[in-house]
Structures are given as structure tokens and as C-alpha cells.
Length: 235
Image 1: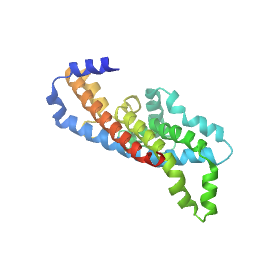
Image 2: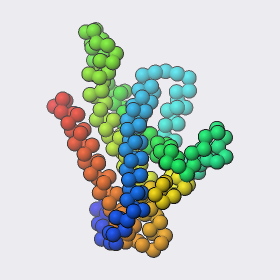
Image 3: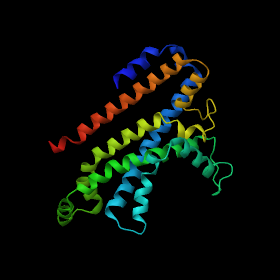
């Protein structure tokens, strides 16, 4: 892993392109969208995992398999599907193509499984006797969740959020079609990097990639620290 990363850092030059207004706008949009997606996934992914583990309903196997669809579907196909579903000729009457809402929809689609699949096995392993004991002592359902269940699944939620954020910040295929790639409006960093390569500025593209890599690594380290803090009660 270190060899390609070192090669990327060695190729990086033309750092002035990173401070250009277009690059800064793309970076701000990417970070903002990735953070919003990560927060939404923390709640929605946990809720879906809880439903799949604790409830029984018709079509549950189908929903469970549907969660893994973004893992199996090529991202460019996902982008084309989203454009057909939420584009100008939308069969459901929702047209968000070439807007920032389209970027959020695309990133949510490709990142949702990360939180679901990290929280789901932890919920399966939880001892139901702990919850029964809390209820027998008079704890409400909310108090039981907050004091018994949440501390146990919080590290898994943070892991899923970290993976979702890292995936969102570098996503290309799912957003390249539906976003429209309008500079200062709907252009994300991955598309900006591709544009630098297309224009012959490989050094500038590598420099932008190094910046995104550094941000992703810093976020992963920060969330790893939060995980350690969240699991200190187990030591």
C-alpha cells in the first residue's frame, strides 16, 4: 500500500492548483456533502440494521439483499440508474439532476451499506438478558437503548461512519453523470482530479489527490480515537 501512495506523493506538484477558486469550491462541496452523508448514515443505517435484526416482516430477505446492492453494482451503473430515476425524464416525477441534491442522493446510495453491515452483526451478538435486566429494574425502552444498547454498538456505528465518509469523499462513478460537474456548483473533488488529468495536468491532479488522502486519513484517525474512547468502559 505504501508504494503507490509514495508514488502519488512523488508525482504531486503544481500545488498552486489546489488553492485555485475552482479547487477550493470543489473541496468544500465534497467535504460538506460527505459529512452530511455520514451523519445521515449514522442514523438511517443504524435504524435499518435494528429493523433487520429485531423485527420480522414480509420481504425481509429481499430488503436484506437490497442493502448489499451498492457493493455489487458498478458505481458508474449506479450513477446511470440514479440519472434515469431522478433525472429530467424521471418516472417518479422527481428531477434533481445536476444539483447538489443529486450528489447527496448518489453518495447516500453508495455508502448506506457500510453502517448497516457494521452495526448488524454487533446487534446480533448482544445478550438480550442485559436488556431484560434493565427493563426489570424499571428502565424505559429509551433508557435501555441509551444506557445498554448504544454503548455496545457505538464503536460499530463509528466504524461504519468512517468507512462511509472515506467512500463519499473519493466517489466518482456514482456522481459523474448525475451531478453535471458544473464548476463552483456541482463539481466534486474526484471530478476535479479527473478534469486535471484530462487537461494534461497530472501533477496538479496528484496534488489534489494527496490533499484528499490526507483529509481522509486524518478523519479515520480521529474516528479511531473516538472508538477507543467509546470502548474504554469495556476495559
